[in-house]
Length: 165
Image (cartoon, rainbow, N blue to C red):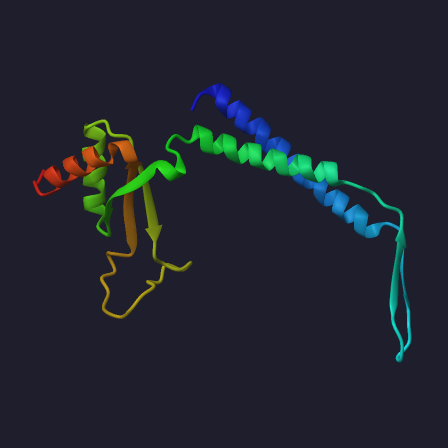
């Protein structure tokens, strides 16, 4: 990622953080304002609730903060490379060696890809699952490419994964 992009993302992130902090302060101020609640009624008749206080409207600040959050999220997504809806899974395994081979194959053929690794352990590295499961298979590995490259990626993976390197 270029230096200018990093600066833009940094500035957007800082502005979003400042907006969130100011929104929190405004919510706190609204809860501390002078207001009163009166309840008039009896056990046998209608009850009325009166709320009185000075109104402070921070809607503009809230909307600006939400807008900054959305712009920052959009900028991160835009600069990430592969759009979320335009990717497809081309390879899935629980074996780290096969996953590594698949990544090397795609890199060798210059096919852009993203990978996702999900570990299936708890905080203190205890295996989740049933008794008798292979402890070496405690993670799942998936490889994603853009849809336009999926067919080519699957072809190269199927051709070269059967061959020993």
